Length: 422
Image (cartoon, rainbow, N blue to C red; front, side, top):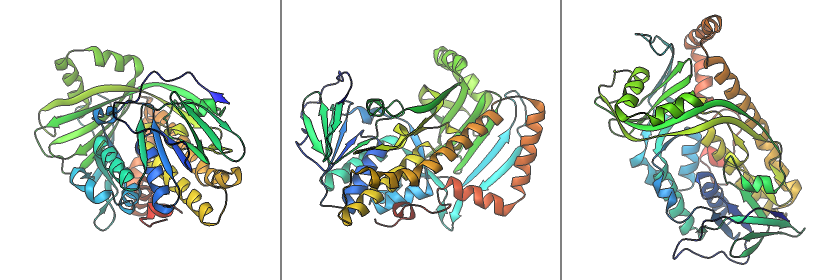
């Protein structure tokens, strides 16, 4: 049996208990875990689905961050009856600009601009508060009869041929399939003995919500600076979310300085085009690296979301890759179930792995190359990359290709990402 040390977090008071049996057990109640569970339950209502999370009840409500949700993921949320409830909280991205400069440069020339629509009236992405996305997904899971149990960390599991026995600190559950959506430092991945390719960038991403005097007009900005990209992402009202890449040492320094010093450093990078700035929430810093699982599946076990891949946020695709995993895995499981196949069998799960692994590796390599190319101040390389950005800006078809890639609409996609039911 794969085992780990029992989690310290106990189940929250009044929280639901885990059943003795289910068809699908999802470990992790983040967006990917909830979306995977809901997608399977919607596609195959006769399959029993359970979600268990190690964190105590209510912890998810403390997440003040926001995420960029690509058009394909918005379509998926629409197919799951979530998008209408999320729309009041969503800020569409109507435009995106890209600059390449040094921190102290008085002028930042714009090398590349993108129109915000992939189709008429459909922005390529929206910014959405994490807490609202989690709240609505939990509501839809409850409506679909999915139990979401907090404070239930998986401490071990055992594949015994016909199923998998999953142990937590307080109970055991028999399931046909175990899905790990427990983050980039996945304990379940380690229990399963799945190795990873990993390296650290020596960078941290500083995340904060910024209030400003003037409206942003829905414009997103990506400023390539010597330490790494500095992204300004529009939120509802006169607010923006920043994802600020710095060396880990400098990020640690910035988190320790007083509020005035931090805002002065922020102003140097943000600029004054939106007027006076103030920090509304944060800042917090997260280490950045590349993590790719060597396998996405074994018998009765599948990885999805950050448990399968953690990439640099330079292209804003981390969460959207997770939604692709959820859509592909759900479609694989539902179609196998309709054909009377064993949903946890390795030959079934390998269809999901073939579907997702190449795209994931491709995106991991792409973000790795972009980060290495733009997180430096090497003059010859700056000249080459600025020339390349300028050429793309003058090629409408190439810009359209990139925007559809960013929107998750390029190439074959699972039905949910096309806005269709499974």
